[in-house]
Amino acid sequence: MQDTAVVAATAWVGPYAKVHGNAYVSGNAKVYDEAQVYGNAKVYGLARVYENARVYGEARLYGLANVFGEAQVYGNAEVHGDVQVFCEAQVYGNAEVYCNAIVCGNAYVQDRVNGYGNALLFGKARIYGDAKVFNNANVYDDAEVCDDARVYGNSQVYGNANVGDYAEVYGHAKVYGEARIYGDAEVYGDAQVYGNARIYDHAEVRDEARVHDSADVYGNAAVYGDVELYGDIEVYGDIGLQGGFRGSET
Image 1: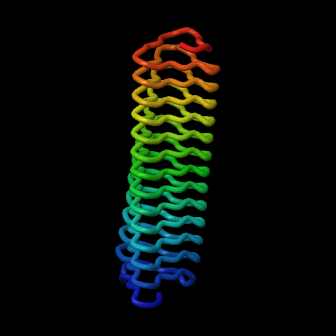
Image 2: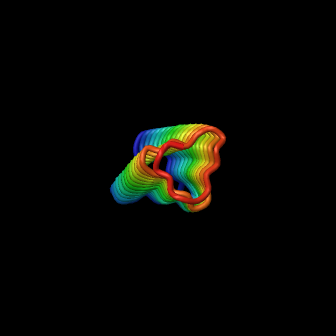
Image 3: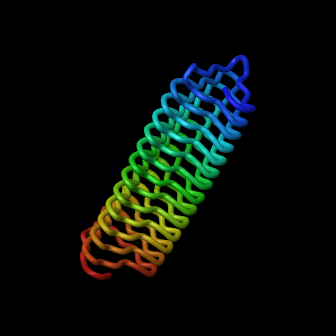
């Protein structure tokens, strides 16, 4: 322990760990291995910081949260509940991660993001802006969820996909490849959007629909049922498509 840091009598700091600056460790929290807690960070409850992890800045770590590996939690971030943050993951800015969420790999969770429920964020995923990822949703690989987007339910966003603006992906939907979902668009049910497809404006893709290749769905268009869109097709306006295969402009 160094500087003006405080470690409560009920907490434990291992012989190689460092708690310094104005950091505060209390409750039954543990900091050990070569982990560090510093700045104005607070670690309390039953939280654990270990291996080479860092918690610093104004960060708060509590509940049953574990931060380990090379992970970092900093800025004004708050991590609590039964959360696991590990590998080289980073949680920072004003992000809040809670419930049973897992952040790992090289994932970044930043800004005013909320990650909660049983959400799993890993690989090189980036979650930022005011985005929310929750329930049992998975975001991984190099995927991005940003702005005010929502990814939830049992949905998956992966590959190099991007979900932004006010878009929502939920249910059992999958968005992957280089696909982009933005505007106020929604992808849900068992729908899949992949390749270089784009869904935007107020468009909806739902049920078991598949949209891929360079297909675009926009305006107020709705694609549903078991329809499959591919090639360079564009579906727009107030049209609704249900069933069949379409690979030319509509």
